Length: 253
Image 1: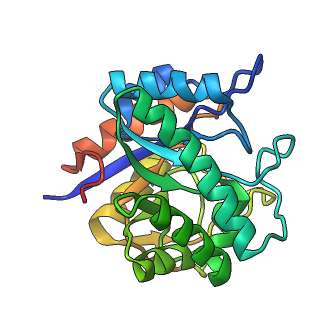
Image 2: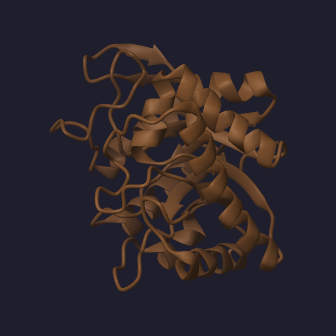
């Protein structure tokens, strides 16, 4: 039986500023990556998002990012192993405390934005993140880009890992995502996105922007929740994946 986890980045509102359609999207996903306050989110938003996710029986994950609120954590920063270790452990620990107080269990950690992308290619940074997660709780699952250094670091330290692919992003021949600075970085057509997901799950392949197929492992699929048509996108992707005979469920340890 083919299965896949559908995850979404959430809790990215901050104070009076609202981002995403978290409450509406939750019924269509199986795992939530909750911002921890550095790139987005705040303590009240973190708690509210945890409560909403638990109501829908959606698995809880921490979504730590670089300390760059104004840049939404999408700008590269030159940080050391120790800085990566500390900022990840600080953020995950904060969310873990809220989850515990709400009677829930934190399942996974997925880095955000530039931190995520840098860790996919920078082994030293990846090792700092993986070690921080392991030292906090070795039972946590580490989500990372399929084929990237973060998954290697997680496995090396002894963490369970989940290979992540993206429904709404295009790929390069290197296996990395096309930069958001490029015009063809995003897939906005839901049929195209769904077909990409189905092929990644059933064939372990994805077509790159160069027109070449590359191999890819798809344990969990990210559906972004901050686009203009995010709700319709999430609903239709889930429907089409299920129609293809793929069971949508949270990643199993």
